[in-house]
Amino acid sequence: MNHVSRLAAGLLVAAAPLVQAQNADLGRNLAATCANCHGTDGYARGDSKPLAGVSAEKIVAAFADFKSGAMPATIMHQISKGYTDEQIKAIAAYFAAQPAKK
Amino acid sequence: MTHSSNLSRRRLLGAGLAAMTAAPLIGCANLGGGPSIGRVVIVGGGFGGATAARYLCLWGGNVDVTLVERNADFVSCPISNLVLGGHKQMSDITVSYAGLERMGVKRIQGDVVAIDPQAKEVRLADGRKLPYDRAIVSPGIDFMFDQVAGLATPAAQARFLHSWKAGAQTVALRRQLEAMPDGGVYALAIPKAPYRCPPGPYERACMVASYFKQYKPASKVLVLDANPEITSKKALFEKAFADHYKGILEYRANNELKQVDAATGIGKLEFDDVKADVFNVVPPQRAGDIARTAGLVNMNNRWVGVNWLTMESTAVPGIHVLGDATFSAPGMPKSGHMANQQAKVAAAAVIQLLKGQPVNATPVVMNTCYSFVTARDVIHVASVHQYDAGDKTFKTVPGSGGVSAAANQVEGRNALAWAANIWADMLAT
Image (cartoon, rainbow over all chains, first blue to last red; front, side, top):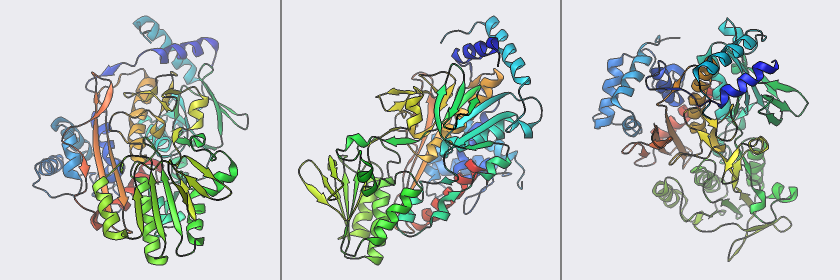
């Protein structure tokens, strides 16, 4: 890197990051919070439930049932309550858009 | 940090892009096609650093990603207590970095000795210099041995193992437990919070007790906790101690280890001396050494403050810091799961910053920690953390999260599935 561009890069990082309320990658970013148990992009390993390719309606309905207690759970009744309805829709849309099989 | 006029920003971006297009294509840029959008050097290949590498490739498409890690393979702290209990082997918790390399991550096995934020380069012990546009440092913890008198010497550290980093210390502690005669005492000293993995010590006590119960039934587990009470899943651990390990496991709150004697193996508390056949001392902790060397430690002289929207250090621009080394937001545990979640916030933000695009203003992270109380029965604690723009920090969502109703075997299977999924998520296996 030459002197000018090095200086430029230094100043660039010093600027406060721009933020965007509705990031285009919101669904992707939110769905990634599920990957630790449900696999990257919803392709689960082991006993975990795969989410890739599951319809958005099913995922939204499951979240509602976890929140209400209608569907018994070990942990999802607690985790589901941490996400807003808008966030759940974004998560559901992202997983629904993944092919069921990689 | 207010330099943001449109004119200078555009000019700077132009200069940056011109320099980048001339850069050779390495790392994930090989797979993404097109010119690289920037060079990211990641220091540390644990839950934070490996996940950052994976997601920079997955989401960035054409980012040059270099991962520097001193160990040849990833060895997981989660599940390592099962190795101590004899229920799992080291091979079960060891995963190679080959998956990341297949994705195009350039991996360097080595030690980072310095980071120069002016020159924007990471320096290795062998003299190599790695230039970066953004650095991600995921250094884990190192120990404050000087907080326990007598623990600073190599002889003391060889006798009083921490085993709070998985790997050689896990193997060594298991050997000590196997060599201990029946009727012996295993003592575990827990430091005051905050420390890595809040429920980890109590899980360890259960795992060692499960081993004694089956193979050395006259032996004892003595838990010396510097904290006033069990710091995570208290009622569930108390029930496990009573249900499964009555007469084997003794728990003592407010028992801070003050001093150790390498010659005699004796530990001194405020009022008592404790003699144990196997004395496992988890010392107080701080951000890993390289965070201190790089000038990143700016909170309580122990931890790294970060901007939670980007995970960028509040001390040194251009360096993002992940995991246990960070000064945690309220209610946020120092866990591998949380480091993985933070890494995704950082990866998304770094890609946006390299492109000169706005970062996500509403990140979410969540945590799940499973603890084995027997070889099969598991308890969890879970939490969800939403970014609060007003207070510029993550906050747990009221009414969300919680712990298991009771220890159970369904969660025993879920815990192993969690491990398989998070290792695959971070290491692209």
